[in-house]
Image: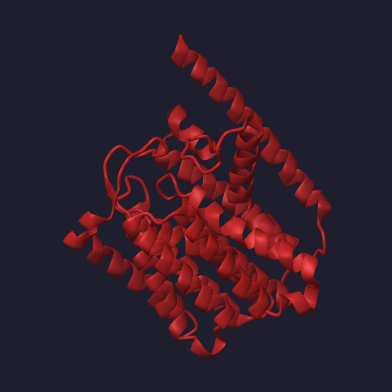
Length: 325
């Protein structure tokens, strides 16, 4: 019975993904290649429907444990993001919903009373960033699904270590659904999750991280370190584009994972390398989860990320010079 909700989540996602792939309705929701894309053929982008449906079905078995400040914003983000996948909604409308979802989470969780207005505002803005960050990093086969599998599994293991079985199962439902989705999304991908999957997942990174923090299962650095492979790539890329005066809302292929794919690593190798990185980061976070602020560990990973980015930047410059020659 302990594993029943995550298994249900995984099976629902598996069955629904298969159904969507064999249903002609998906022809209306194709991800067409553009200047940001790393794929060359149209691919259905309805995987988020199956993924989030699986999560919610698994969660339904834990109904009494659910928090409205997580479920309601999640459903709202899913609906609006699905509409965006179909009709391409204006960015301002989407961002307004992201802000509303983050506000419901911060207010509904009682975070303002616990931490004060300034920290609550920082949490709200961080949630909006994480919500969009996941969408930015959903650009290579198996990448975003893998981050969900490994990241939320680490949340679940941390909750188990703190004897909070309920929160562990809620997180394992997410990772279970992500595992099933990956069976169709790993290279060569037959389906993409679309905004209806990536936007809600980004929100859940913040929401589940906050939930565990409030229940004193971990401190604030733990979720940030667990999901740091995504946070660092997206944040550094955004800062670099901003400093150059580029429009951050424009499609591009400047993320480090994108450059690795373009330089010949390919989707499969990039995904496997990211899985290894996610596993190491997550394991190290679990190892020192009881430490209020493991500055040595954070310093080590900070230096590691800096070295990796310098190496990729140097390789990219050589690659571009070779193309020009």
